[in-house]
Image (cartoon, rainbow, N blue to C red; front, side, top):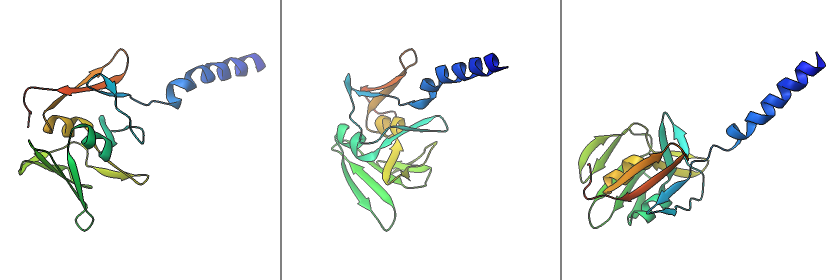
Length: 142
């Protein structure tokens, strides 16, 4: 019995590192994107801290505390997101999003793929090495 318990404990210890830190690295134009907080996954969507992703994409951000709305603008696009809402606006046009922007442990998180593609970037997933890449595409899918 003792041998069985030790075997089970050793098996559990060997798989713990897989679950202990499931951080998904994000690369922007082949360089690691420095994030103040780790990406979060919700319902298959990766959320990242608002400030770093919009800074990397070249956007200015305005926060409206009263409406809980983020307005990010660049010379090419305006993206409006409201905390808790699954509808975003890209250049004034309503677009559904799978996971609403949210406040997590005091940090504002937004859906990485939606924001990047709305800004005219492409987003890819490297399944073998488990990381996300963002690069400039020819046109926005939004």
